[in-house]
Amino acid sequence: MVDTHGNSTKYDIHSTYRLNNGQHIPRLGLGTWRAPAGVVEHVVKHALLNGYIHIDTAKDYGNQNEVGQGIKDAIKESNGKIKRENIFITSKLWNTHHVPIRARQQIDNILNELQLDYIDCLLIHWPSSWQWNEGQKMALDVEDRKIDTSHSRIDTWRVLEDAVHQGKVRTIGVSNFTTEQVDEILESCTIRPAINQCESHPYFNNIPLQKDMEQRGICFTAYSPLGNTDGNVSESPMAEESIKSLANKYNKTPAQIIIRWHLQSNRIVIPKSSKPERATENSQVFDFSLNESEIEQINKLDKGARGRQNNPEFYGPGKKVFPTA
Image (cartoon, rainbow, N blue to C red; front, side):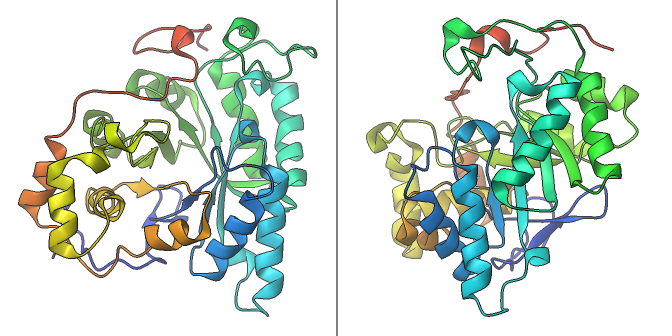
């Protein structure tokens, strides 16, 4: 069997995608967004001890200390079977940390929180830059968000490039960037973005953006891969009769069907879980393949229904949120 790009679908949990810088990113990872305190450390450790080699986190998730401890504990408890160099760790630079001096500080802070000497991948989390205010911290509340026009996206990108040269980061990329915003980086960069991590699920497959990225040699990573319903499964793609029918056919869960669809559509996929058993279940997607008509059947569920818009008032195709370089 082959996927929609002619690649073998005989993946396993260690299968990787070769990035434009020669590094390899595992095709399946564990997302840690909204993983609560007291839980995420255990889930990360469990995932790594059970085959995962890709962990995705971010500064604004507020749990990087626990993610880092989970990584450390897994390496220790594996008795040498798990090595740091075999784990791919992604983090992200938050919107209030785009000013170059603060971006440099936050890269060091991320390394400290994760207890790492280097990050495998660092992304600019959103194309928007917000003013930092000590009282408002990271401006997570909408009313606290104010555009910072003191710098450009390229200024921020230069800091990421420097981090690569300094050995603090191995791969750099973006998240939630439109094609136009990616092209803005490409026009001035010395290191090309390797990844664009964006929302993608059956109700918002984002295939046009994925194709644009592939044409530019940029890997597309799908976050919120099972849909954006805040836990309301009845409004999720997993409740679709066609998805449930495929789950019955292959003796899998609807979530496993959707994860497999992402993999065969040449997307890196990072389903999140706060439950060890669910993380294990999400990884059990390598013993079956969807056929081309089934892939297309899921593609047709698309509604253009973007779920997550952390900063909708500052984000949109073609909208310049601060000056370009």
